[in-house]
Structures are given as C-alpha cells and as structure tokens.
Amino acid sequence: MNHAQLTALGRALRLLGEHGEALTSDTPDGRLHEVRADLRRALDLLEESVTTAVPSTRCAEHPGGPVDASAPDLCLLCETRRRAARRSEFNGPAMDPRPTATAPSRYGVRADRPQPQQRWLPELWTGQEWQLCGTPRRDRREAELYITAQRRGPRPAMAYRLVHEFTDYEVLRVWGTPVKVDIEPLGNL
Image (tube, rainbow, N blue to C red):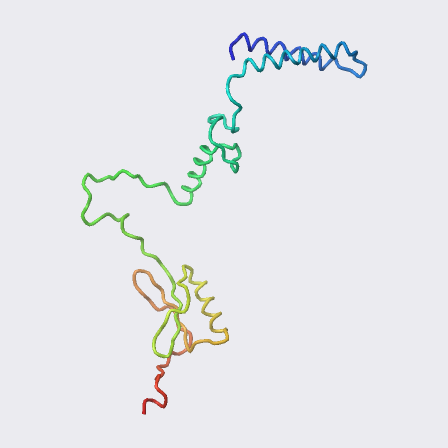
C-alpha cells in the first residue's frame, strides 16, 4: 500500500467513524444512504490497496506458510521449531553431525557403541532349570510386582527369582526353594 492509498483509506475510515457516532434512532434515510455510499467507497479503497493473498496463518514471520491446525498460530514452520526445542529439553541438545576428528577410528567412537541397558528379568524354576517367565522389565519394582502376582496365581512355580541384567547378570532376590526334580517316574529305576 502506497502513501496516497493509505491517506485516502484513513480519511474514509475516519469519516465512517463520524457517521457511526452521529447515528441515532431517528436518522433519516437520506443520511443512511450517504453512510452506505461512504462505506462502499472505503471498501473499494481497501480492495485496491490489498495486493497479497489472505494470510493462511496468524504468524507474523510466515503469514503464507504451511498450516498446522494444532499450533496456536497455525504455523507449521514455527510449531516444528517449538517442538524441536521442547524435545531438546528432555533429550538434551542434538548431536553435532560433523565429526570432530579428521580421520575415522577403525575401532569406532563411544557414540557408535550401543549404551548398556539395565533390565530386570523375572525367572521361574521349572524343576530342571531357571526359565524366563515374563517380559524383561526396565523397572525393578514393576518386575517384583509381576513375580508377586505370578506367585499368587492359579498355578505358581516352585520358585521365582529376579535377575539384574546390566552388561552382566546378578541374581538379586529368590522367592521359594528350587529343588531338582527328576523327570523320569520312580527316580529312573
């Protein structure tokens, strides 16, 4: 919008404001027709001065950008940036994709190796050996509650144990007494 258009539009809108202040219940029809003509003139000036498309978002930075209906300002670009910032709060900053060393190591770098995982394995005694009886858990308390529920179930095993797996295995707790059971009847006589 150039300066002349801006000045003309401002004058027309101020005139409409004066018309609005002067309106009463007994305003004659001739005056209302004058208001209507001034209103059309202001709309025509506005049509001439607007040259761009209607903004698809409420974002001042990307008014014609892609739309994300879940974003408060409907701007997909800004919402993507906000989501990345929220993600980095929980996951830490993103790693730098550029290598710091000039030559790659033939043994790899620490970030290439998988991180050791800590898990708790619920196991039951079958009479011959220890057998995994449920999904390995990431939470010790959850694994212990699972074993407690198994012991209270309709067909509990003779013994249960909880094994801690963290690059190595360590038996943390045993429920019951594992007894070796011969699978042959009458002790293999």
